[in-house]
Structure formats: structure tokens, C-alpha cells
Image 1 (cartoon, protein in one colour):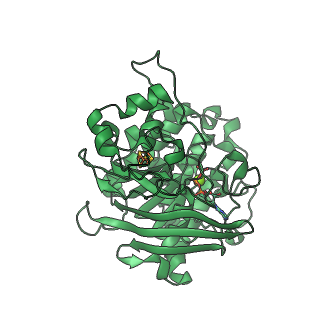
Image 2 (tube, protein in one colour):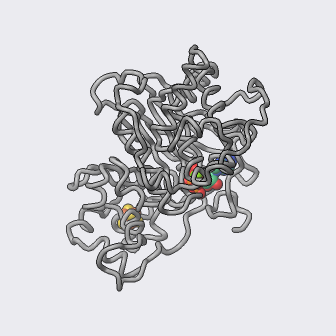
Image 3 (tube, protein in one colour):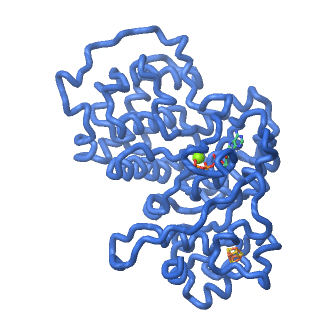
Length: 413
Ligand SMILES: Nc1ncnc2c1ncn2[C@@H]1O[C@H](COP(=O)(O)OP(=O)(O)OP(=O)(O)O)[C@@H](O)[C@H]1O
Ligand code: SF4
Ligand SMILES: [Mg+2]
């Protein structure tokens, strides 16, 4: 179905949202300034990530130095709760059921990873939280942000939420960083849009933020342009920009896919470290279960617009209870042991969201699908599993008990 807009592959990227992003920089107000000669001519190490690699944490300021809004209530109380979220798009081919009843919650200081194959509804879920979807999207459910339902608030209130309370980091830093302006000016401008503080104070905060995300010599770097930053440093600068208004939640949608593996791991580490130290909640969207393992506290695995397994990363990895999660894990490269076992991709393709399969949406690809269990006709709900996480699979109890869920997926796919 080459022309099916919902068939997820790299050639079927959804149209971009009509509204742009979130890290809003009013560039029209920034004086055009050609800036100084690139300092990298004088100090070529400034262009590379070596300095960062040598000092990955950077000279991070102490917690007390960071201006950050108070976190209400105990750390475990969710600040964001998404309940029964559905998103349908009207298209010429029919209605695309992109998100079909998603629930999750995230607390201050917690990293929640949302994982799933292309087209599973990760970005649409994130965009709907910040109301960044095009008018063709019909969004229902509840997005409770510190008790306030964001789906019901005015556009004016939403503009305040974006950037100042919830920041979003995208895959490509250049969507948020303007190459014509110095990186520091953009961060300063961003701070001043959201807070009434002097330019001098905003500049000091910007330097602090660049330092915090591990950019060496932040007092020099602040006056540079994006072309003087390496890919990893741009991504760090974008995190600094997102942090500069002290958001309580950062949504990072595939923030490191464009980076090489080493830099990718470091940028994610910065993000997770900041979440834990500054009590910022992070929703990290990724294709890759590998990056989740060391970074995230909780995980939500999405398939065909629904969460099919969710819980702590340890519980979910230790006692995987959904064949789809097991399949994702089986397709991970192993660093230790099992080196003779081939990597096993999950067979088949993600479904068209114009007409998702009946019953369990994973059934056409599932090795364990059975008529008797209701896989083809009854949509499984998320249930608490013995491992402590929730999974939506009719057969998970027997598959778990048999103890061969992962192995069978590995051997038989
Ligand atoms: N504006 C839109 N109009 C119609 N369909 C859309 C639109 N945006 C997204 N979709 C569809 O919604 C579904 C979920 O898309 P989404 O972008 O959330 O996937 P994803 O999980 O983020 O995938 P990826 O990993 O490739 O980024 C897909 O079937 C996609 O084609
Ligand atoms: S409900 Fe059935 S088809 Fe769905 S994952 Fe479980 S066993 Fe497979
Ligand atoms: Mg996406």
C-alpha cells in the first residue's frame, strides 16, 4: 500500500504540524549582528566534542545555584497524567486512528521512555500534549498538567505552558536554533520572553545552563554561532535552551537520532542526569530500547496507537510480559554473551492505522496469537502482571509461566 498515509516507514513521514515548535525565539526582535570571527579559527578544539568527552559532566554548578521552580508534593506524585488519549486524523483516505486510548503518568525527577516502532503514535501523543497537531486532528481524553486539563485551556494559557512549563526538544537542533544568531543571544531572548529579568541576568543564566549541559568554556561558547558547534554540542545547546526557563517537564522526541552513538549516549546521559538532579520530569521518545536501559526509570511500549506494556524499566526488562516488547528486546544487539545468536527483527510490518487489526493489534505478527484466547477479536486491556508492570496481552500469564517468551521469539521469528 504505497499510498497509504498511515503505513509507517521512512517514506511515509506524516506531514509536519502547522504550528511550530516550542522553543519559541522571537528572532524579529533580535538585532541582526554578523558577530565576531569564528573563534574556532583560533581554537579548533572548540569545534569538536573532544573537550566534552574529556569532561563529560562539565563543571556543572551545584544544585543550589540553579534557579528552579519548586516541585509540588512528593516526588512520586505525577505532574503529568495522560488519560484515555485518542487522536484521529481526517484524511482523503479516511480516518487515521493514530492514538487509541493512551494512559501514562510522569513525576518530577523521573525519566519516562516511550518506545515503539515507526508509526506507533509516539510523536502524535507528544504533540497532542502541547496542542501542536494540525486542525485535521481530533483529540479526546485528558492531559492533566499539575491538575489542569491542557486539552481544555485557552491558546493564551497554552503559550505560557509551552517553553516556560513544558519544553520540547526535537531530533534536529536546527529546528530550534537559528544559524544567523549567536547561540547565547537565542537563549537570552528565550529567557527574557518568559521572565522579566535584565539582559545581564539572563546572560548569566544562559552561561550557567551551557555549563550545566557540559559545554566547555561556556562564557566563550555563548557568543558563538551554531555552525561553530558540533552536532552533539548543538543538541546540548538545545537542551540548555529548553532548560533555561526552568521547565518542569521536558519532552524529547528522538533527540539524538542524528548523532553518532557515543555522542548520543552522552547527550542522553546529560538529560537523565539533569532530570534526576533538578527534579525535572522527562518524557523521552525513542525507537531504541537500548538507550532506555541505562537512562529511563519507567517505560511505555507503544504499538498501533496504544500502550501495550508499561512499568519500571527493571520490571519490564526482567519479566517482559508482552510478545511485542519481547520482540523488541530480541532484536537488540547484545554486548555480552549470546554472541552467536543472530539478531531477530520482528517479522511483518506495523499495521495501517486507517484500519487497525481487530482484537489485539499485534495479532497478525504475533507468534502466540490464538483464536481461543480471543487475540483476533477482543482488544486486551492493560493488566497488572506478576513482575510489577502492566501489559495488554491475553496470554501473558501462560507465556510468562512457561518462561519462554523471549526465547521463543528469538528462535522462531
Ligand atoms: N497530520 C497527520 N495526518 C494524518 N496522519 C498522521 C498525521 N500525523 C501522523 N499521522 C499518522 O499517525 C500515526 C502515528 O504517527 P507518529 O508520527 O506519532 O508515529 P511515531 O511513533 O512518532 O513514528 P516515528 O518513530 O517514525 O517518528 C502514523 O500512522 C502517521 O502516519
Ligand atoms: S493478545 Fe494474543 S496476539 Fe496479542 S500479544 Fe498477546 S498473544 Fe499475541
Ligand atoms: Mg515520531
